[in-house]
Amino acid sequence: MLLDLLNKNDQLKLSVLMTLESQPSAISIKELTEKLQVSEYHITGAIDTLITDVGRLGLPVALFTIEILDNKIVQYTRHSSLSAFNYLLYIYSLESNFSPFFNNFLFERAASQVEFLDENFISKTSFFRLRKEFEPTLKQFNVNMTAKLQLLGQERDIRSFLYIYLLTSNGDVKIPFSPDLEIELDNLIDSTEDLLPVTFSNADRLKLRYYFYVIFVRTSLQHYVSTNKPTNAEYSTAMGRMSVLFTKFFELPNELEAQSIAAELSVFLFSEGITTLLPHRTDLLPAIGAIREQFQTAFHPSNETMQQLFTPDVNVKLAQFLTHLIFFNYPINLLVDPQKISYLNDNFSDYQTFSQSVIKTLLPSYLPGRDCLFQHHAQALSTDLLLLIVANFNLTLLTSPIVVTIDFTYGENYTKFIENEIKNFNSLNLKVTHQLTDQTEILISNLSPQVMPSTHKLQWTSPPTSSDWAFLGNLIVSIKKERHLNHDKKNKQKN
Image (cartoon, rainbow, N blue to C red; front, side, top):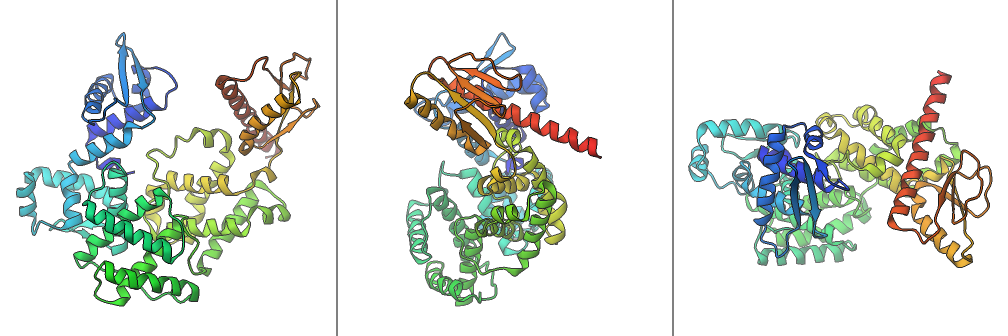
């Protein structure tokens, strides 16, 4: 999400790579220029340097190859399950003009601007130009830089920026601290896991390595954040145990600072959906209530259905989402381009529209002071909410399922096998039957019976291939889109 801090040519190369990786087949240079809104000259230059850059990774096997056929067609071939994106992002981050700025933000080594320029061989002209380029990204986190190139702002916001930059630029390609410190941080994570108690995934542990590393560096530089001690009994007990642990590990000056770190950690873990350990926040209830009301207005479910949709677990998920909006200046998902989730765009467009409306028009009035966050990350935050809805709501309660009838002459077990495979599409709200009726929308069979004009027929005389399943998936999407269009037409006629 911090691609704006990379050099412009590197930004373009990563955009080209992402576009090529998302293509099922070859793509013309003209199409690439239209998608990325740059000239053919810049596209071919980016491809040429991408080919060179992948060799710099030093990996035993090339992750991809790119060929330009007849000076018109770009053929991208992936040779590994690994993505080259993270590796190249790491290299480009190290070579970025922003890299020396970030290192000084993190470690505060330069005592003055002059010392910083001398150490990094940067001219005054370049310095002021780069500073102007970087300021908009820093402002997204509500932080700025001082004349001494230190970060200025609330400590929580500064830590958030440093954490996100390290996580997204380094990831798991190369941990930017010593093996000894990595072992100590892993031991701290193990102890935290035991005290809560909770089980962290590998992804959670990577996040916590960077999270604790930033706290380690900031507290060693005597940058502290002190908050009021939590009051909830169960919560305070767990935080108290962790504060003892943190006092020793971070060599903190007092117990209050350790309690503050424990409180901040609990908010981080809760808002990331890693734990549910957080005092009940009554101030979130009006926003959750407003989301419920807007959902009911948008989709018209009955009161009984609303109770089935907004379960206690769903309300906790909404509280986690809102907590993240209150405390952090970045979205939960760190997708490079959250707009390009075709599965969501194709199948849940109504809920996508609803999520965008909640983020753009509803929540800003309930979360004052977060205008900068909503302005800069509206699309990503909408995706966060959409993912929450799709993953946690029982959406089959709201729309009638697509009826799929399967009818084979190959025996009961074969038919059952196909049925079980089709159930993998259940998130798309399907109902599988064995009897052809006027409700059937898709018929799958090895036969060629006469069916109603509204029924889509798939004839599978052999066991289905990946192409057959892809065709079925696309057909389901097509039917859902047709339903959506018909629904819009009816609404326009009513109005």
